[in-house]
Image (cartoon, rainbow, N blue to C red; front, side, top):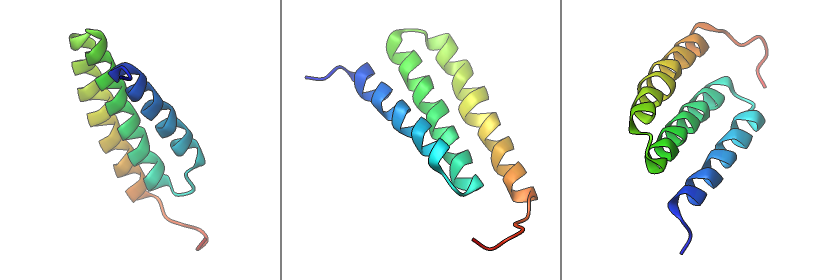
Length: 80
């Protein structure tokens, strides 16, 4: 049986690579939010619940909202 932390770490690496490979800014912002949530989950599995809660509120919550709001304020110059 594979430990949960190895599975979460694999998903974190996939999200990191997905954020780097994303062509659309909205997709990148959402994948970064998922990355932050997975970091929160990994911290909770490791036993750092207080740090996980802070990461969930700041990293996965507020930062993702700011990223998405910023992307909505931008316009496209070309239609790719």
